[in-house]
Picture 1 (cartoon, rainbow, N blue to C red):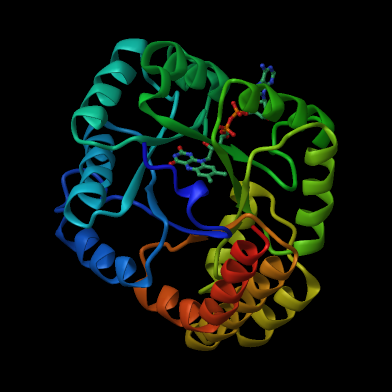
Picture 2 (cartoon, rainbow, N blue to C red):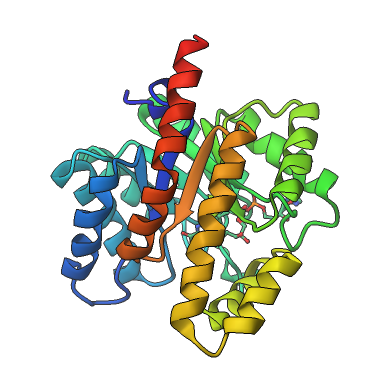
Length: 295
Ligand SMILES: Cc1cc2nc3c(=O)[nH]c(=O)nc-3n(C[C@H](O)[C@H](O)[C@H](O)COP(=O)(O)OP(=O)(O)OC[C@H]3O[C@@H](n4cnc5c(N)ncnc54)[C@H](O)[C@@H]3O)c2cc1C
């Protein structure tokens, strides 16, 4: 099976969302047309609530794999799903040649939203027990701990349980402070978590977005970021410029810290990705050649 970790390090991956509900997939394919020109190692597709959104995840992940010959990763969650639902989706993905899954619990409004699986680990175990090595399974991790976890250590213990089920790699929640990420990664390694960890980066493109993101995932916002959002917040174009510059610098610094990969939360904004890509490309490739030369 195609395992991109064996080919390129550090890896360079993108995340997109599918169209909601019954909206056409053509706009999303327009975004993918641009994204593939930056040669990502994979493009992952988020998974939301509701039947048609979920069908769109399968459709778009399959399209990435088959139309663009780029590794497509389907996100899957435990929210409102039975074993049979998951089996039907996995069978469809397998038939379409999609061999990479990001297995998640999903965001909950209420615990009763969950179906047959209560934690991502149960979903991962189901995939492994029923499909063996047909799928490479990835899992999520949280450099500032998952909001519901009582402590980083407790969260890492559960992360290790996911890893021990045979997860290929970890994709991190977005963060803005690389020191926080480095300290957490050291703790994860000290606990025996050995899987490659792909660092999640989201460019800030508006003042409203940062409030929403912080509320959703609790990421710490460095003073420097707060300052540019406050200073330029009334002018979206200026916040976006500053956000692109910050994300570019953040990635260059992460690469210098020897991360195993960068995962860009693209928000389907191909132009933002183009700007960041042109800022990091020479550094990314310098790192890749250095890793190869080291053997
Ligand atoms: C890269 C990335 C992509 C994402 N994509 C999507 C998406 O497409 N769709 C979507 O809906 N959401 C998505 N999310 C959000 C994710 O679904 C939420 O963060 C969710 O709340 C947790 O998912 P998880 O897979 O990390 O859960 P889990 O690993 O199950 O952890 C959830 C919580 O339970 C705790 N825990 C785990 N196992 C146990 C146990 N056995 N006993 C007690 N506590 C336990 C953990 O410490 C944590 O606090 C994404 C997140 C990331 C980082």
